[in-house]
Length: 142
Length: 121
Image 1 (tube, each protein chain N blue to C red):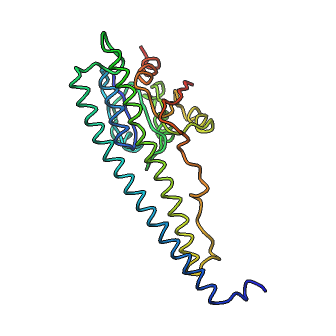
Image 2: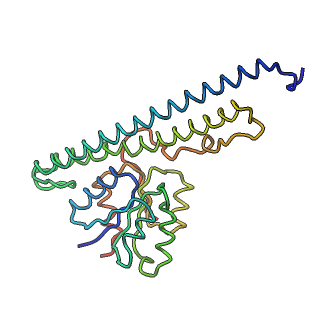
Image 3: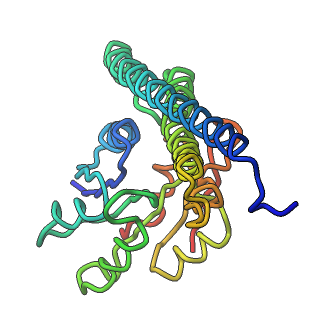
């Protein structure tokens, strides 16, 4: 039996399923957006407190001075760790674009537009964030 | 006072880079992407440019190419500070005219050390 002989009821079920999956993917994208905002807000607060703590500690600098080497080292470590939000934000943005791309594709299928093909370029693009830990990255001078 | 143009679309990264540089006595001009950087510097000169790569409107490599086209930025050190760590991207950065490539996250002491090394005396 060829594809043209597919039962109309089956097509309807497939279209409904595609529409439901699209809704779920869009909802997941919205949740990721909320997560991104929460992280951004948390880092804003952490940075404010970091700056205040730095001032209260007598401005020991980040490279260490006489008697403040330990404190400077802790501040440097905190500064490096606080950069997690930048990487997390890029990962979330990339994941949201992937979800959106697949959701659009499913939406297209749900309305019977499969012959037009799907725009899934985003799914194929490599994520710019390869880091798996918040350790200081490499430096290369040309 | 030496001036540094810091370009990053992430507000928290701009804040951390600026904090690190200002606490070491540098003047910092902040920009949110390549286009904003070109708009902010206008006709003035800066001693060093520190830029992210992936940004809206104009990315870091395009910014570098545009700066290198101007005589006043031919010898200015330009460092890329980015999450991108592939060899292909680094080579593209080198070809565009970058002085160095730093992968995020940065260690404040190492960032200051590299800046001290590439800044003309």
